[in-house]
Image (cartoon, rainbow, N blue to C red):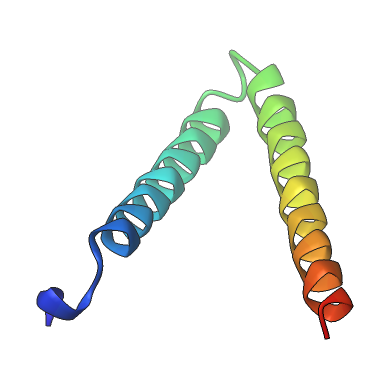
Length: 70
């Protein structure tokens, strides 16, 4: 089964899993240590908004480019 998967796709999948683990650990750490470091929650929210905005913008550009080639 792994022979059918390209190496690039496998590494992208691995990076996505590692990124999600990092985000969930960061969220857990921020919630557990909220009383000592309340700015961690705000930092996590700001980073989430920035990453979501970039993803939406990238998807918008890709869709716009795909529609213009038709």
